[in-house]
Image (cartoon, rainbow, N blue to C red):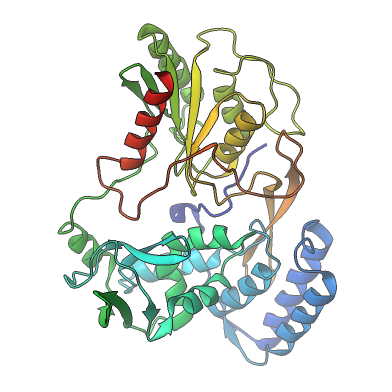
Length: 426
């Protein structure tokens, strides 16, 4: 089984976006096909929004289709309808492809990254070129509208199970959300900040990707997280960053080879504890998550309640204390790995809670709308975390390490994690 991340998307993997204009009759035909097919095939469709309310929304949305529409406008309309169901695995990804194509053609977008901390929104990265905006500064309003109101409207474009999940997604996708909200003709916004108890406003012009990249080079360096697999030692502590769960380099056995070398190194250096870094990990196939867990489990385990028992790996098995470092973007099978280790007391989970859920829908299928060619994803399987908890929720760490708004190249979260593990070793 392959777990699919609820909010992690690789834009390069999306198909080319279909353009063109369809008649109102064709738009309505696709909309009917959308809802009818979801009712037939998506068993989770009414899990969060009951059928009477969904039927009412469907009829109101259908009645609102009165004129010809471009495929991009259809995608926006249809995605908002699907997103109303509150299921992250039911979605139409065409907005991503449209935004990608818009940027590739020299389109301009909002040049700041925003981070949510305790319900407040901060500048995480400033690629605007404006010196008056400081990284880490709180944003209070956009175009004189409270930022919470803007984000609440932006959330309607994303399929998500929880508010925290969609807010985490918007940390990456807010430029696209603003583009969907304001339209491609918008070329700036006004942001409101407060400094020394004085409110002030900054006009932020939208920029091309090339302009943003050039401005980013002038900013203080920030932490860059990549998917390269790493393994090493920090004193008595072994460190692993396993990357996505799959043979992503295109060679079969690549992940197993990485695990073998990493655990051989732990044995050679007589590591007393192991820190496995799952931050920003998008997950992948559950077989790879199970292969990693088998390297340090001291007894048979389950990856989730529906999986058969899995025996520990007999060779190069690590028997010291294991810590799993997670954050809000630990997703899919990586989040399930953390939940499995936590539920069966095979490791201590540290960091911050995940946005992705570990009980619920996990795999997807797709169907294509006949008139527009838009692809619709929907869930086809459901799993429960090993503890048997039926209510979907995040993975909560056993020991909290908060992620700061600005993460510098020294990686403060990792340094805190190593310090915590070192203290536990005594």
